[in-house]
Picture 1 (cartoon, rainbow, N blue to C red):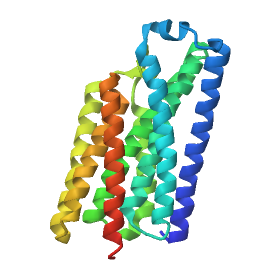
Picture 2 (cartoon, one colour; picture 1 turned 180 degrees about the vertical axis):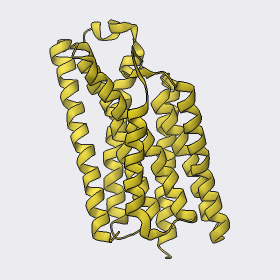
Picture 3 (cartoon, helix red, strand yellow; picture 1 turned 45 degrees about the vertical axis):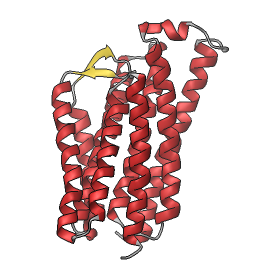
Picture 4 (cartoon, one colour; picture 1 turned 90 degrees about the horizontal axis):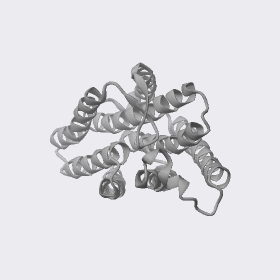
Length: 268
């Protein structure tokens, strides 16, 4: 993949983030101004008995959307002329985070009692983003350790197709969860898959440290562990403590992951 093609593909990632962010903002507008008559109505807190989980998810998805958008521009300004496959896939990990904003979009559809098919579709799209993001981190480590730089385009195509198939295959029930998505019938199986991929995403950078005899990749493995743990917390846990810890880990891991890669590629 040439540098021009790479930047074009990344630009499409930015388009996805912006479209989802605008949809998120419109959903908030209709929720607060039309459904609950601004200023704040206590009905918002009592609806479905979700209470504080409702507010937590509003602020969490807003943070994720801003983080995803700002992260894209920071990476674009720092790595626009770098062919690093690690940062290429990490950028798409940031793009995948923006899919979490669909949780609020689905909430608006849900309270308006729009047909169930939309809720199932939104749930599958969010799971696509979660699978895609985790596998992007996994492939970032693979390219650090042994995959060929020339195969970036092929790897991304296979990754998108695989995640689409996986999200389509996930069974979806009609039970609403605190994250505004419908539940699945294979929660434990999905947890095992996430743990497996997360562990190997971290190990890939440790293998790279051995193969390249470069201790900088050990630090990358630590930052990757912070990223995948943070992503797990903000996606599947709903307590204030878990959300704050998850956001902190995402910020910490992403910041130092980018800085370390920048220092590595200055010498390549």
